[in-house]
Structure formats: structure tokens, C-alpha cells
Image (cartoon, rainbow, N blue to C red):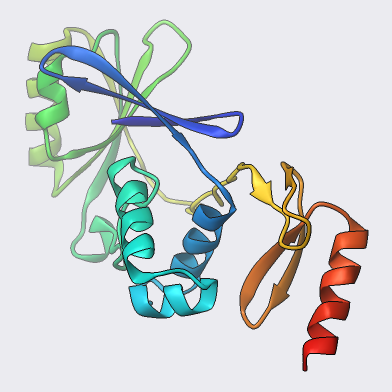
Length: 209
């Protein structure tokens, strides 16, 4: 499945029974809060999220299920790179066409469509030179003429911070905004449409103590 952010919506594309299916997911401020909590602590319980966000546990479970099914949440555990497990070789492979059989090759970990003479770029991780040659031979059968480059050294490896765009609901007046003012209170982010609403909310909090 491929996932793209367009405006306020996540659009996912995937093949099902040979047909391209399209799914649209609109995120709101509750979804963003849940994602933030999971990002801070992937082991946080549904009960704790419900307490922090003043939601019911079934609502939290349903929301997280929706985020998983639509590909927003990929995993809850620490990801261990293959390079940490053994001495591997990373390959970058350029090809002219994509054969569906390529998607079933475990060694290929990333595939991109790019500009240029060969519009397909793949990243593969193999156990050694023997496996690299075998993979190149297999890909040649599927995609014809290919170019294989071996990565000599990883100079930088960082995951890009996801940019989440959503329609936020102001926690004071209830109006919506795409560019909220964020205020963290009791470890939970609160969203406001303007400085006046933030000021009024903080005053209400002080007066309630």
C-alpha cells in the first residue's frame, strides 16, 4: 500500500485483486493527540490514553484501529535494522519497469518511482556478495536491463519527522483551524484557534484550581 498526504487528508492506494483501490482518511485533532501519545510511549495502554484525552476506551481502540488499517500507524515496537544483526551489503538498483514479482522479494526493502532513464529505484539488503549476484540475476529476469550499485558506507541515516496536517478543533471555543496554537497541559497537547482562546483557557484552568 502507498500512502500520501494531500491537504487535510491521507490518501492511500493499494492493489486488490488486480484493481487499484483508493481510500481517503481525514485526521482530526483527537487522532493527532493519540498519535502524539503513541509517539512518546509506544507501550501506553488504551486505558491511559482514554484517561488523558477524556475518551472512552472503546473510542480509543476504534481510533487506533482506524489509524492502523489506513497505514498511519506502522508498528508499535522498536525497529531493529538488518545491518545490526549481521554484516550485510546494501544495494541500490535501478530498473526500467516494475514486475509484480519484485514486490515478493524479501531482500528488497524499499521501492521508489523516480525521474530519469530508469524510473524505478530499489534498495535491497543482502547477506554477502554471493547473495547480491543472485539477486541481480533474479531481477534481470523480471526487469531486463538493470544497474546495481553497492553502498560502501552509510554517512547519515535518520527518519524524517512526519508532517501531520489535520483540521484541529479549538479546545476553548470549538471552532476549527489548520494552524493551531499548541499548549501542553498535564502532558496532553491542547489546540487553540487564536491567542484569545488560549488566554481564556489558561485563565479558566487557574480559576478551577
